[in-house]
Length: 125
Image 1 (cartoon, rainbow, N blue to C red):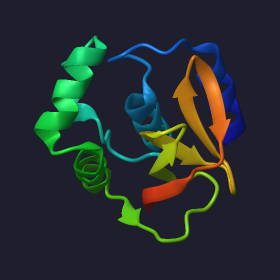
Image 2 (cartoon, rainbow, N blue to C red):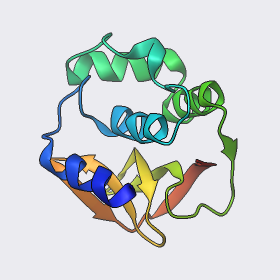
Image 3 (cartoon, helix red, strand yellow):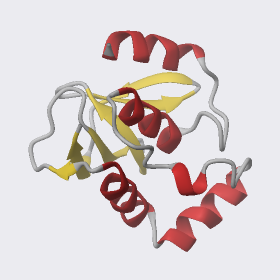
Image 4 (cartoon, rainbow, N blue to C red):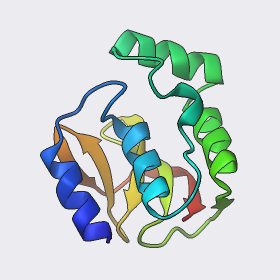
């Protein structure tokens, strides 16, 4: 199931408010049968500026992701496994991503796989 999701993720171009890192992770969580963690802000932004404002209003990326994880009924984990989700520091920025093991899949122009500099937060899916 994850491999098919990642293949689809790779085909989709990055688009604020449609196919960005947070919404892609939320889509994965929904695919796994959980409530939509991004429901309150879907359709509320379509530009980078609007996205940044929404993150700021939420109290930052950690707060935004924690609230979404709570909405979806996800439990925090200190040891993420394949298919879990999290907020990682990669390429100098905090991004929502899906755990593949040592590496994480994140939304860029298609699919980006990175080894995080730091795992800021993670949740069991």
